[in-house]
Image 1: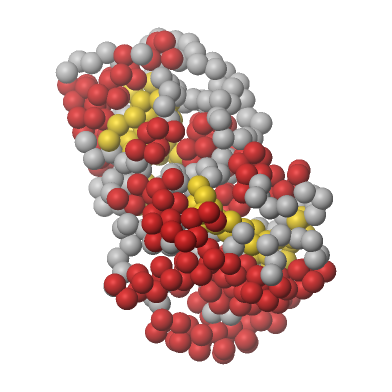
Image 2: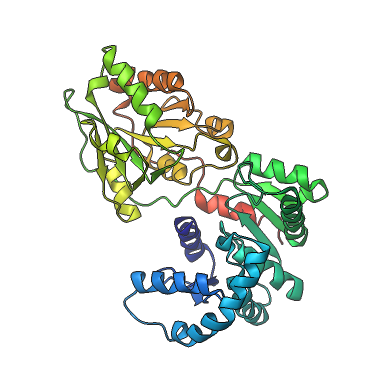
Length: 399
């Protein structure tokens, strides 16, 4: 989520004369051109404790605000946690942060009367700040939900689902525009709130196109074929079916199959992790800064895109997809989303059903068959989703 916001801030730095960022203390301190940053602690003791740890990990200096806020979070914040636990078990909503950030948002609105307010995030604390600020000051409000409030895989009681749906409708009703980042999520929201359909839109976010270039072009036909996955493997997002498909191709003597080497740049939280590590054709690479990870990705022959093999993938698109598109590398996708399949409609993308070994085997076989033809693809960015343009589209209805 932080990379998502970082990219939008890079756009704001270049396109707006002044941007005010209201955020938590969890992120790294950074000087931004044309961006004034206000860091606000959470009231919740649980959330404040997490922010305290993250701030210490990411920053060398100490924060006077966090020190002063400690007794407030340690007392009133504990009462908040008890009270909020009666309403919801989802502490990741960060609603207590929304209430402490509200005075800052109101002050900015008063001092910058012509401003508009954009709220994004997976957690809805930021959206809550936007909603409350709009109710008090009528600031033009633009909401972006990185994940749907009512996802198909979310386990909720009927009462809880109805309450969340009403809350979602209230958010949308007060917004100038509410943006979802997939067609399916927007469509589902319109079905729940048809009277607000004109305020609901889907806009693919795009990713910042970092100036990374490949230094060396591999040419030896006897070298390995490296397929790289960027990110964490866990739960239903794993390589189990991929390795079954690859092993079948190897056992059948399929051309180029024995040359494949799979690498994961990131963490692995799988019960069968040891099975991965003993494979001679698999290697883990340590996590690194995003730009360094993208540079490393350019050294690979193809990038691996893995979705959860369940219904949650039908309403989401991994953000790394837009990084992959910017890199211009061939993509092997194990996906569970028809919308993503339509988005990656190109002969350098080899897509398969994440739940089907046969489908993965077919797509991987096509990649290996055509490898000699595609290995010289240009690595210049080919993405149709320029983040500057995608960000502009959010505000196009506002004059």
